[in-house]
Image (cartoon, rainbow, N blue to C red; front, side):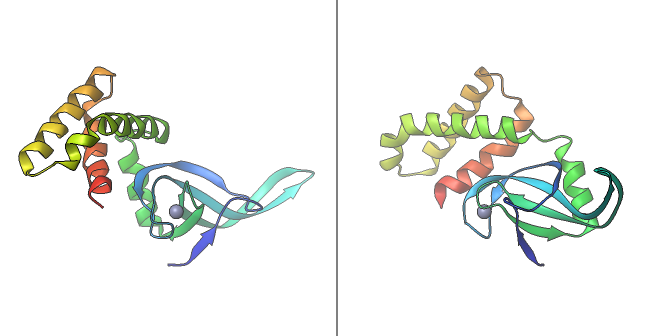
Length: 150
Ligand SMILES: [Zn+2]
């Protein structure tokens, strides 16, 4: 699938947030968006026609966009209805960072699965305390652990 650099000079429209994932281009865990690129015709600055629409999954860090077919775009759009938006995800990600930062010394001495379970429980209960939704936690915690292990 072709990739496109968004950002300066690329006129695109945001379709929806697409959650946190690992970017194949810059290798960061980042928030993604689905953006639409289309050719437009305007008459006295009023858009009158749009064609050749294409959808891209765009990384919030490097701004590279991976072209999506309609089926994948619709699938992500539907999934996002029950997932946290990018603002919530970013706040939760930062909260998880803070919890782990406090535990970093213990993480260094980490020697077994029981500790991983313990910190997982601890993170979950601290996230619940700051009013994060359980379904959002269940979406982000595994992602965050993947990020930590890498
Ligand atoms: Zn990226």
